[in-house]
Length: 289
Image (cartoon, rainbow, N blue to C red; front, side):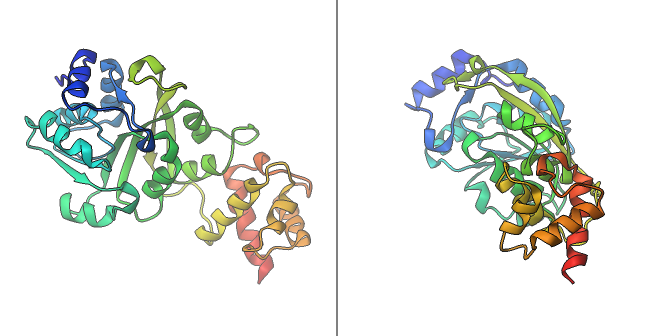
């Protein structure tokens, strides 16, 4: 199969191009073939699929994706890696590299241009410093994305699939679970990378829901409520919601809404489930009328 998962070959490419991992781009080069195979397997890629890869680096995972997929579009922000990718992907005529910041890419337009408007399967070894903005861009309504299989910091992966009642449960947990079904595929130790990061990583797959598990009257307002609920974790929900000026919710209104969904006025955000946050936002909309 692909050969860049071999540590010796990876080091050869790094030396050939005088590369060093760029901290500003969160670069770590994956050198564990079993993890590479697990990622491709978990993503469920076939020759019928067009894969959108974020941050291909030197093309290690890209090679594995090219073997399995019909087409791979790799978005790389670091222009110094373009000649490297031209070299390592030279044997694959089903790959295309875009030199761009994924946060600035119009994914819908890219899907129209490259995939007949069909949704992508996204696969990536994500930079840890910018994981959440990328995940949210991919999940938000309207993004043509079928599934997202990514390597992230383990604690972030854990947070994505946490349920109410946990200290790790928060706005990211609710957002990811509103749009998708998240499942951790495997935990990846620092020794699987060059250079070695200081933390464990994990591969997580988010399968996008065709229909959201919770129906809300106003999605934007729902997410405002969730954000306000966790922006001051030590405060009660009544205080968190009323302190957020954008919501336009008083303490009495917040307390009344909580009681209407069967919760105490002294409740904190981490105690409410995704479904309860949905009901809370709908009740607040009614009370504001």
